[in-house]
Image 1 (cartoon, one colour):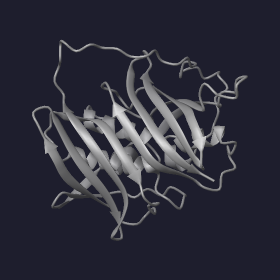
Image 2 (cartoon, one colour):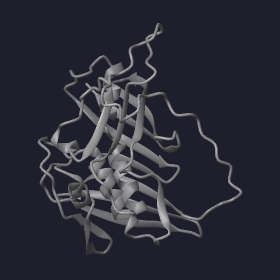
Image 3 (cartoon, helix red, strand yellow):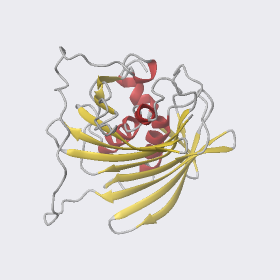
Image 4 (tube, one colour):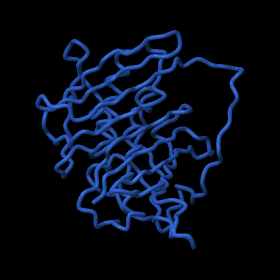
Length: 273
């Protein structure tokens, strides 16, 4: 993707009727599979198009069944599950050539102030300021075609401690490379895209297969959106490898705004061979 207009194009879907939505843009990504974050983001957009305007996504739970192929038509079938007084839920199936490649359940909450709600969060992890151009940032993903629409400031994986564990496997700042419209649903969809930034890489670090895995693919993915965010403002993505066993890696993560506000949490299981 060349610039932020490509993000807008990627997340513009057209309705083909009966709750089915199709992408209007198929980016050339230089890989033989569609990036999982694209499926997540487009599913969020499709589901959002079917709920009331005052409802925003607060969680996404997805399963990847097989790799989707770039340039081949995709269709997102949205199934209404619930519309209550405060919450809505949709199930979205991504279909390619009559084969279901991905399914997500997207839950929505009415965007209403709750003055009696308690606000609590864990503190943000320590990281250099994203504007520090002098810092020796890593370049694991920066510069690739798929992520060219994003500014990235990446850190190398933390070294293992005396017990062999690592405080983080990936840590990076991200934002879109230009301003986005004031559409909270759009920003949530872009956050869903970014929630898959290098999660499989994080799992490979503690599996001892960093840069060497022949199979590295997402099995399932969960995202929780806690507070409003702007995808065109710096956001810290922190990924911790929780477990490696039976060729599967589990990674948990958080997203924090520059001021430390926790905006999202995520978890993903990855197949590693």
